[in-house]
Length: 479
Ligand code: AMP
Ligand code: MG
Image 1: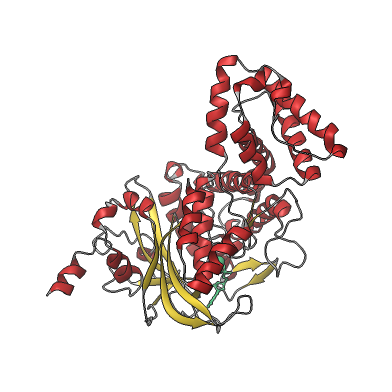
Image 2: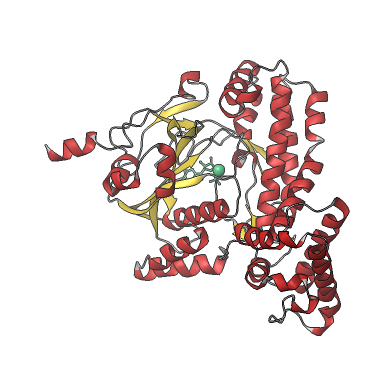
């Protein structure tokens, strides 16, 4: 009796699922089942997200996570492996699709927005292409950390709802193997990608492109729904959302690493974290994926690549939107990116609004300084946050007075930076100085999620099954 009662009271199973994508019919997905795993150990549950699901963390047991998102018992909806194609490293690939995940369900958050529960590592599907359909535990750990760190940095991102270790041994070319397995549930706005539309274009299905666009606009761009030119307006807004997202990555010092069009969400949200890295020092050529031989997805290429991805999306959308409208939409990318990037860098420097030429010049000077000094990118902003004081506005010699920043040969540039910062402080009313302090704290996470930090946490798990460093790192990147 007891297990049965427990099961029906699982709060995840009685959420009000809304089969928004499912009702469009089977042109966009295949129904699949989940793999059966030998064991299930809950390694991470995101209590932060439960509020959005209308759940109280205290009323959700660890076993509820395992039953819903590890053994996949009594699922409320069929599991949908989504169909998509995409440009991977510039080459069109028609053999993609959810190969190790599916859409578990969709629901309205308490904020009224539609959300996806998408799995990763839940078993093979018709799109696995010989792969095992699994997620390594390290891959799961890394995605949990990336999403939380990006969220803290103010990047619009998917988050992980749960990570469950599943007791299998996996073989991978890029991890010491055998390596441990896991299954993750990702909570995101949508798993529809640029590549979802690219597939429909390839199949010559203008009708389905229109149906899917109406669906996307209804759920993710509802303010455009009743506009006559809603398709063109949608593309123009998507361009702006992606420009903003790119600026968020860039200011956070984040390199996504695999910006294929199947990893670009149609909602403009960041998702799917594989070989990503936060760059240690400012370096536009910094590349995170070892297999990215030509640096196509390097840190500094991200704006150009995102723009290119938006340009590729013009082919499918060109079935229902005029090229003049698409071109007009895309043309706004650069200006919007620059404006968002400048704004976010100013925030990281403690400012809100500064007149344009001044702001531009100072952001440029800061980047020049970060590049030439090769001072640790995140550390620079953390140090600024910690050292800043009211006295900096009174006396230029107070600026970073206790921190030795540079060798002598960069002294000139560093002095230029200090003079610039001092002058900007002087240009603000004195009353605003306290707000700088607040802003610095808000926009600069105290802990950066650098690779060595992740590797240290992972080594403790791999060698000692010691999870304390992972939880500690998670706490620090979230705080
Ligand atoms: P990703 O690099 O995670 O964005 O995945 C690219 C494509 O490869 C998608 O179609 C995935 O579903 C598929 N894929 C990645 N890893 C696996 C795996 N272990 N088994 C099956 N398919 C996979
Ligand atoms: Mg992907």
